[in-house]
Length: 178
Image (cartoon, rainbow, N blue to C red):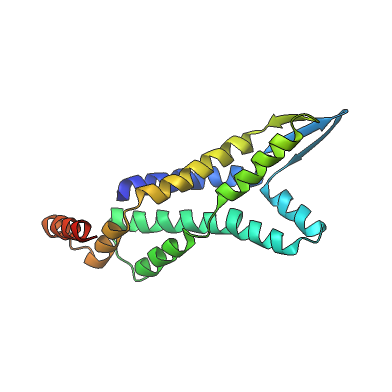
């Protein structure tokens, strides 16, 4: 699961920047067009004085997903190369806490509602950022499914002692109890 988690986290990091910074949708009506990305949306909320909404969107759709993917990539990479720096436990603990707060799928729900509401009154064009954002949502869901917390904790606790027989026995016992 370490290699799979590393690959998924790295894919997520590759998709993250175009998903956040590239235009998602373009709306055209009567010769006028308007495009926007996730950061533009936060700016619009601030301009309209919806400060709390802007803060929530920033943390749940921008900062926390980046931190979650970065932490998972770092922890997975360290475990993959059999390195156990002091920060590894803290990073994995932070990853587990952020997993509850990084919610790009909530932002996707808002995009979906916008598309449904606007489809009859304006032309909507999907930009590359939209597809990257869909990929990012799928990747963040995949990270949740690919990480076996018990096996990651056991690898972190083993501090590089690659006694796989012990690891497999301990993991089997933990899964049988839980």
